[in-house]
Length: 74
Image 1 (cartoon, rainbow, N blue to C red):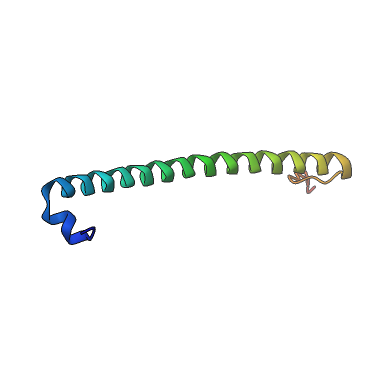
Image 2 (cartoon, rainbow, N blue to C red):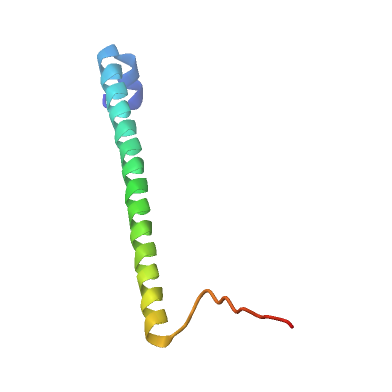
């Protein structure tokens, strides 16, 4: 008598089933929040690495990402 219907027929089993379901939902929500925090941290780290790599390339090879040529027409 371990079926889903049996759990809902007996009140004690129903409470236990609902408690288990709430715990699972809480764990799922916590894992989603945790995953978002990890992804955000990983993205920030990747951006910092990309900025450092760009600075190294500019310093070694003389590439400039922002050119400000002053053209004076007389």
